[in-house]
Image (cartoon, helix red, strand yellow):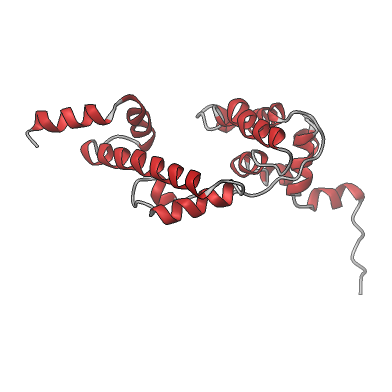
Amino acid sequence: MTKPSKLSADEKFERQDLDLFETLSELDKKNYSYLDKLSEEQRKKFLPFMMIHWMSQVKANATIEKYYVLSVDQNANKYFFNDVIQRHPKLQWLMLCASSPGLGKQFHKWVPHLSDKFSKLKDTPTKKELKEYYEKIYTKISKDDSELLATAYLEEHKKKTYLAKQFPDLKISDIETLSKLITDEDIDQYERNLGH
């Protein structure tokens, strides 16, 4: 009976999974070369969408929390899903590193998403679902503020749903853009012009 051969240190490293929390720590430290040091198998496990989601939320003082949200949005999220950039994980990594203030390791927390059926305009959330969602994200939010956010979301969602019904050939991204360009008065005028 033959003994199984021992793995070298390099082989052991290659077989390791990508550690989420170690990866976040490297982003916090602005380690621009970290992705280059990973094995091919580990690089395949780097999921940019998941990393941007984790990176944006930290548990710290209010200033640092706001910085992470705004910086990740400005430095990464704004261009992250561009058709060209999506094909370059290294560039996405660099964008995430640029988002960090470089203050060292932070405690990152997972923020739940609203269901895809809402963002794809297939269904409308209830005000209760939205309030619960905002209260999970913003743990110190008042009931009045969660009510205001839920109401604003529902009003915007109603407009997007209307546009999706009027223009069924538009992509969701186009509907998002259009909803920012037109007002409720524009929609009312459009309906009057149609004779409704």
